[in-house]
Length: 194
Image (cartoon, rainbow, N blue to C red; front, side, top):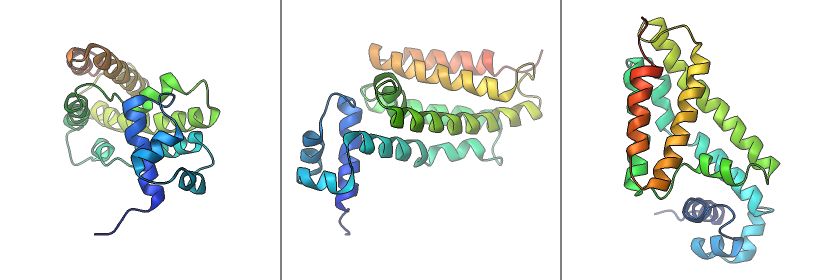
């Protein structure tokens, strides 16, 4: 089996450590210890912890296969939205509500400290919203969702509500907020016309 490059080991360790302890809760030494690499190797690949954080945000936000379902027009638009959010909820539940969403965590913790990470977060949220918007627009075109609000507005509200629910679930250590998100999103926000 091929061995990961040192850079990949550092990125994986950084992701794990940031999800468990937050950006400010760990240092380069802890990341390299988790990766099993010398501290000097870190600086061969990243100029700072902030640079590693920015790369992890990019990978976390773009490297997922899960969002592809939102653009899959072979599936019913509301079913693909439900399945997408149910899959995300499963991740929260399986982590015992410890992890939260790295993008949400970094938004709360780092966005005011690091313009670089804030810019990367903003770009990911724009693309993520656009993917949700695609599914909502398809549902509106099929008459499944009211059209009094634009799909982009609804997508922003849905994503913001989801991120808030994930944060609340992390605090409460249960899925109550996630279940409420699903119920309100699919019975009220993405409700049929009339």
